[in-house]
Every structure is written in C-alpha cells, then in structure tokens.
Image (cartoon, rainbow, N blue to C red; front, side, top):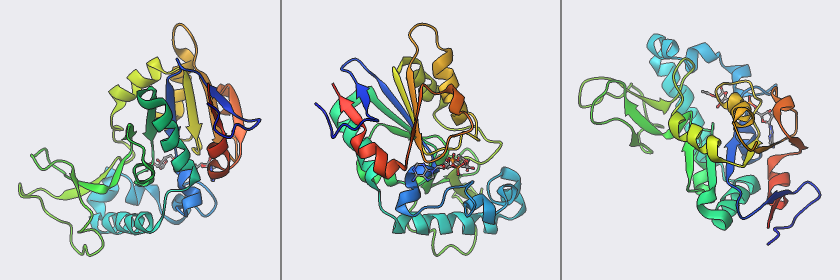
Length: 247
Ligand code: OAD
C-alpha cells in the first residue's frame, strides 16, 4: 500500500524493521524551540546551569523553573503532522517499528506512538534523587505551582526525570538491540551534535552483515551527514506525511 508516495519517498518492504530517532526539530513545527538554532534554548540559557548535575546542586530552584517553563510550553503545544505520520507508520507496520526520541516532550505519545523510548528523559515525570522506591513517577500537577524543591518520603530531594549532560542516557541496551536488528534507520530533526544519539547512524553502518539503509530528514544537514545513505531536505511536518511507501 502506498501512502501519498512522493519522489522523496522511502520504500518499506514487508521484511523491513524501522528504527526512528527524533530530535528537537520534529517538535519545532509544534512551536517548541530547538536547542542550537539562533533563537534556540541554549542561546538563552547556559547548559551548565540548567542541564548538568553540577547546575542542579548549585541552584536547584533555577533548574526547576527552567523545566517548569518547558512543561508549560509542552502542555500548550500540539503534535504536528510529523508526529502523526510516525504514529501512522507504526500502526501500519506494527512491532517492526521502533521510535527513540531525544525529546522530553510528550508529543509522540499524544500523536499515538506506542513503541517508543525517551532516551533523554521525560518532562512530565519526576524521580527521587536517591535510590528509594519512589523512583520515576508521573507528575503533571505539582510543576507549575512549585516554589520549593519537593522532598521525597525518604527525605531526599525529588528531581526532574531528565538526563543531564554527564549522565547516562536511558534505555541504551534496548536501543542498541533495536539498532542491531533494524534494516532502515530514519533520523529526523537533530543536529548530530550530541552523543550517543549522533553515533546511532555509525552503529548501524558498522554492523556486520547487511547494512541498514539510513536517512536523515531536516531543513539543514546534520554534523554527521556523511554517514547517511540519503539526506532528505525539508521540514519534518511537510516531508514525513507523504514519505513512506509501504510495499
Ligand atoms: P538541536 O537544536 O541541536 O538540533 C535541532 C535540529 O532540528 C537542527 O538540525 C535543525 O536544522 C532541525 N530542525 C529545525 N526545524 C526543523 C523542522 N521543522 N523539521 C525537521 N528538522 C528541523 O536539537 P537536538 O539535536 O535534538 O539534550 O539536540 C540534542 C540534545 O541536545 C537534546 O536532546 C538536548 C540538547 O542539549 C539534553 O538536554 C540532554
């Protein structure tokens, strides 16, 4: 079956397994700022103060405020056509689809994606800083009214469930397994500046046996552009909805 196939379409056969990596660019058309664009988040904030364990220790209130603002923006935004296109692709090919996002917003879930992991954490989750039983829970109520850093029943501070610089991304074992068995790797809207995500395409290329086909979709070439089979220029919300040709 063909979904509005365009000249830039990607053919997906009945035996393909698809691994998708998304970055901030896929949420840009939903109104959420990316990180490294000229008006991006890192143009207005110092990474060290709001996105490192050291920043959290030095000024936790500032870190809470930063993520509370991100949550407000994410709550006010809606999934765009690119999020829906990936959810639709998953519906069509089922468990042969796997989505790994670097984004901490919940727009993929709200568009209907199911088989996904958030390797850099999730905005609407909180966890205990220590290793108690309260680790990682859904938290949609407390953020906006937060004045003080909340404390867990065990006495330790609660913290945003976000992977900061210097910390290990989540779900890496599963991600590696999925890259090892995919036949098609599609990367959307990420600058290729942050590892390990920027290495996924290299991991797929370095595999023994059949190489995966690798595609990048975005308005600019990422830093790791040379590693891809094909670069498909364009905004995700305009490109993805007519890109998949399911054979
Ligand atoms: P960046 O801000 O580094 O890159 C965003 C990419 O999206 C750029 O390459 C843009 O060209 C592209 N882009 C912009 N608009 C787009 C659109 N409409 N459609 C498709 N692409 C578009 O963001 P990331 O690469 O996601 O990590 O950043 C990676 C990580 O760095 C983030 O997860 C975050 C950040 O620091 C942590 O905070 C741990």
